[in-house]
Length: 111
DNA sequence: TGCTTGACATAAT
DNA sequence: CATTATGCCAAGC
Image 1 (cartoon, rainbow, N blue to C red):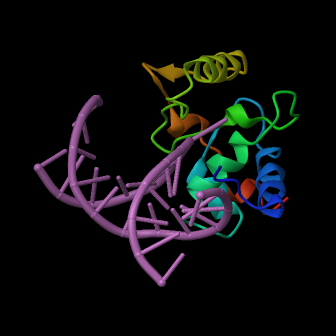
Image 2 (cartoon, helix red, strand yellow):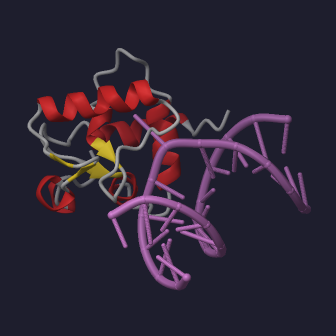
């Protein structure tokens, strides 16, 4: 179990909760918002530890390339895509158009 | 202490 | 474009 510290998780959730509906962010961007670039993988673990009934909009966090992250969990990937499309996020093939839906880093400064 | 693992990122091919 | 190779960082063994 590659769990991350509770404090780190809380900080990650704090940032993710600030992402407005219809916008997305890359793992690396979330890490950067925590003033800790390079922690993108840990951000992924923090989200993986979320309970299914969480209030955190985890589906708005995808890879910087625009691809949906969870490849080892098809069920979650499909749900994530469905949730995003329901919020108005458009897909170009199998990836999100980050240029249009990527959130500008200035919008959230540690929550 | 050193190797493995993972919802990643970036550059090279 | 897609695929592969490297670099990353923290936690578990």
